[in-house]
Length: 129
Image (tube, rainbow, N blue to C red; front, side, top):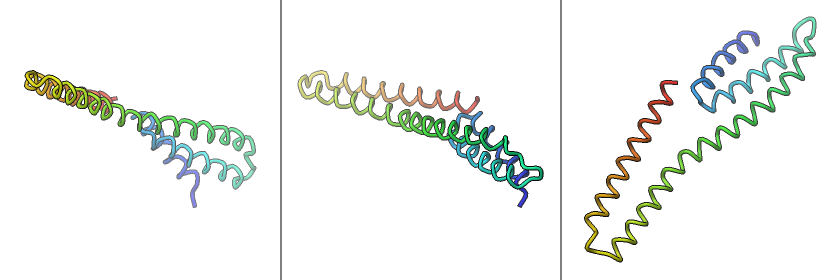
C-alpha cells in the first residue's frame, strides 16, 4: 500500500475542504496524520520526529472538527428557531387583536421572505469562497 500517495491525496482533499469551510476537511486531515504516523514507522530510516508532531495535529484536527460541526449545527438551528418565535408572536398578537390579522399576516410573510433571501445570499457568499 502506497501511504505516501494516500497521504498526498488526503492532504490535497483536506485543504480543499477546509478552504471551502467544510468540517469534513478536518476529518480528512485527521486521516492524513494517521497515515503519516504509520508511514514514519515503516520507512527506512525511521522518521520518529514526525510522530509527536502529527499526534499534536490529531488533537488540533479533532478540536476543530468538533467546533466546526457544533457551529454548523447551531447555524442551521438558529434561523429555524427565530422563525418559530416570530410565528408564535404573530399568532398571539392576532388572537388578542383580530382587526390587525391582515397586517400581521403580511408582516409574517415579509419576514419569511427576508429570511429566505438572507439564507440564499449567505449560502451564495459561502459557495464563492
